[in-house]
Length: 136
Length: 187
Image (cartoon, rainbow over all chains, first blue to last red; front, side, top):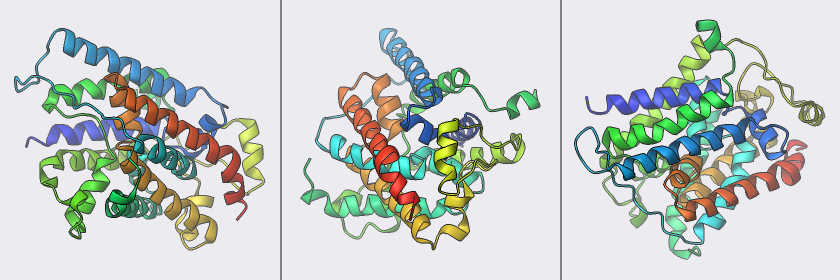
């Protein structure tokens, strides 16, 4: 069962998201009103640990458990990161959730979040449908 | 131990643990941390509609769907076994502002006065849930990632387009929370 580890990592992430109140609509409102350091502390320390890990992996050429070289695809710049980023930011402050937290919110039993998830799937579909017409 | 886990976890515990998911996924199978691509995989699996953007082998990315399923299960576990049932302690200024719209802190992680099942068919509820969801799905795919893929994975691997995206996420959030949301809450 090669997927079991991803299930376990997901469970761990879901528990953290709930217990650190990162999926709380109230915490997101505080973040965007600069009323709390909490979310900045979480994202900042997560990035610091992630950065150090990636540096160590590259510096010592640490292989995966299957002995492969670690590959991190490059993100290429396009205007979508600005326009799309702004649109996502608007939605983030409305729903109090980015994509990961949406799944965690639904897991806590907030059934109506299913509507938000359906909205996000529809939004993704619309992007795919009109992708050619959008500035990139 | 269990009562320790039931309290809200401080940022300096949660943040580094999330950061460790980056090397865990890289070393566990050469996977990069990210969630929002799942919405694309679901579109590709369920309604590709001959759209080129959805014509790819999504089954190769099914680990990502399993990861999202895990997040769902983790949310359930945390809510059922690791909850202390206390309402969220929130900033007094925020509490005062929200009370004007009839929104009060509660033990539930999302306020039921906004995101309860009985709110789905109200104007305010549908704008926030469906409208907000559309923006999240459209925006993340347009931006090529979300808080996980850009702000955590992208910044961790020093990719400057991810920094641009993160600044845009925050700008959109500030704009919504401070200037637009008060009008939506008044609906």
